[in-house]
Length: 374
Image 1 (cartoon, one colour):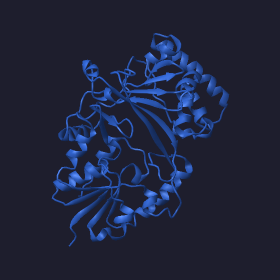
Image 2 (spheres, rainbow, N blue to C red):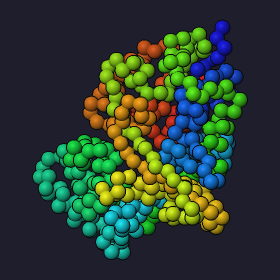
Image 3 (cartoon, rainbow, N blue to C red):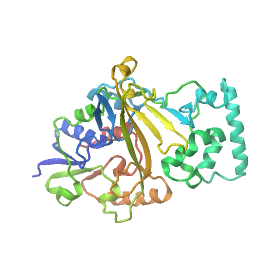
Image 4 (cartoon, rainbow, N blue to C red):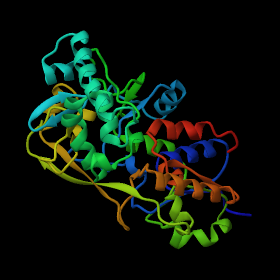
């Protein structure tokens, strides 16, 4: 008889939540992670008393009360509201596109004026298309929001993210662009939003309390050939193509790198997230981590601050995969790999890497909460 009911590969939110549920159901789990820490990409590193989101900004948001109540049963979440700012050549614009943005862009002060300006620019883009559908991301975006917003807040930022011209990106990447004719800088429409008090490590530690975990362990080197001798079932949250030894070819990813530094003063940019939407800066955004958890006077009571410049790059072997590339080739190849999944007895593939789909945090947890038989 095996020592464990489940071997869980990866300690991110899918793996950690699964381990929590399985343990509550009386099952014994072993969680392994190739990194030297638990938590996957939500891991925080404490620097100068500030929880630094080591793998990029993670802001929890959901409309699902069950998910919100679940995570708050593990750790209390704070009141953080994501209201990013865009910096285009030194001029600042509020995001998402709302009346503040339109005032900053054109000086308009009423929804009717803003709507008329957008419709005027959209009409120009649609007329240029004639009777055909948009053939690429640039044409799609122009037909949705017009020239000014596209050129200042979308075009160069998107090209930095994807490493490709907007004319070379498929139109379906931007199906719609949210436009709000109200003065509302809250990026998300979700009812619930926040950051765990004390950082995401508190959430992961709570989910994995009482679970045997081993870090610095490579599944492919140490477990894949004989995992059935260790556990009855496998939960795999690594890269989908890697599990199958890339037999159908490699899936493409975008990855992200960070340049993080400590500043010897308390407030660098006054906001957690500032996007840099022109090619003048090579990074896509700057994250100032303290603003996720420190508000008002607390910002200044902490005498230093930590910022991270974020760079989007093409994935190369040995890097950390972050985002699936949603083009025709990769979507088709991923579907072929998913067909192979059906033949893997007693293996559950989960998470962004294991399913080759982009997920926010809440839907990952929701997936696990909805699994009926654990």
